[in-house]
Length: 230
Image (cartoon, rainbow, N blue to C red; front, side):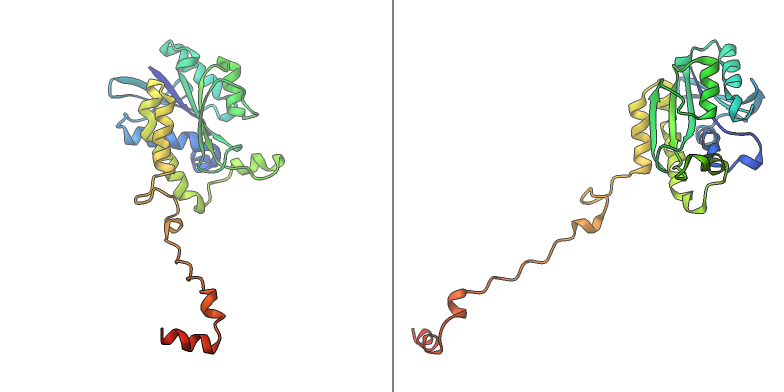
């Protein structure tokens, strides 16, 4: 059994924020895989279901981002889980928009939600890092992640959420490679035909014009006349 956690802040005010991409991913997973309605429990909202034979609990902490670990720890205690049974989905400013990475363990890189999870259960859990891009300066980060995604982000964001949902059964089995493959099929689909991302690159180039015959170009009028009667 896996506890799949999406990080974010509760309430409609934050629902479209970049910081809430973890919540968005869990909502898509629950909808696509027929999980039951969300209910309040463990200082958050949960939906418990299955991917085939594999049981999973989806958790959205409602303690606000900075105290996410309280909710995660409470759910782990209830279900008698270990840190390695936990997968946390979160926004990642150090990845370009649309990039997704899976990792196990490591530091929190200053992410306040991960910092709280670390403090309550330690670092030995899996993370799905969902790239949202960087504003360019560290002082701009708080305002950036607490703003809504721009309209221009809608296409890549939808691809990422669908990809994460497609790969959710692989998160439940702990198969990171299959999960990343499922995401990749959404965010970097293989083109038909040549297999190149840019079909224009496959266009045939025009043939080079034939090189002039130096002998004919330099022939004198008399030589040309002789050539005609040969």
